[in-house]
Length: 299
Image 1: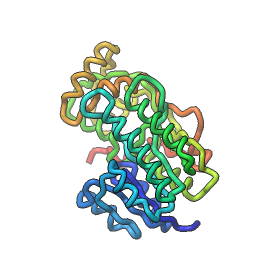
Image 2: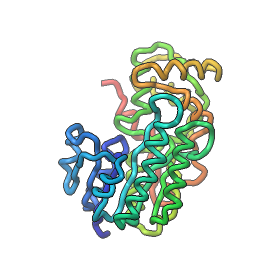
Image 3: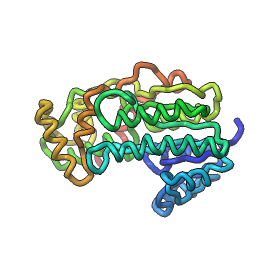
Image 4: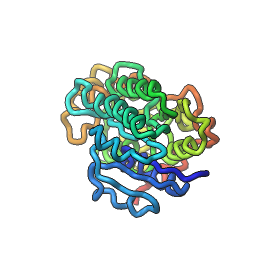
């Protein structure tokens, strides 16, 4: 496989910490654009990986950093925003996708891999709607694009199991909104592998891959399983939607914003794949039971 020059947006986030080492093993020359390169020095020690301070929302900066690249990867995404009017989601997802596709065309970067989400463009949440609008910008760009729609992603330091584990360590009872929402958690390593294989195979251009794990699980069951993994006996209390909405409203004002009204709206739709994108790329999905027990076992 020919080594490529790749520019990654959002490469210092959770998925990026899995993807950058995976692409480095293939010999690619990787530039990761970040707001603070000093905070992610562990990535910069990888061979052929360079961290560059850059404001990816500035079109001129974006075009300058893309010049000479063979491909761009956009991993930028947020789950919550300041305020509740959707403007934060639009900036992070829609406006950035528009700026990126324009910069790619202007600099001759024809290949673009875009991170999205299962159920993008559906439902009432700003998160899912903005993900769908970003996809539209990418699909209409005339670039050789590939879009990935994962379910919730798990792995070391994730925002799913690890966040609930932190709550369960201090809360003997955990009220839970939308406890019956369904997910098919997908391993971060499998997501990284999907991106790597797409880069290696031009046939993936123009394709959308739904990425999900082998097991569908309700949120309440997932939280109870997490409690068992960390060795805690906890009561998980499913809330009716009226109380769940109230919890989300209060959660917007708590440190770290553990849940918001937009999260609540997103949870109305099950995050379960309709097509097996991992299998289409020749990847056998990793079950969460093979990864999370070792990561969350009591020390």
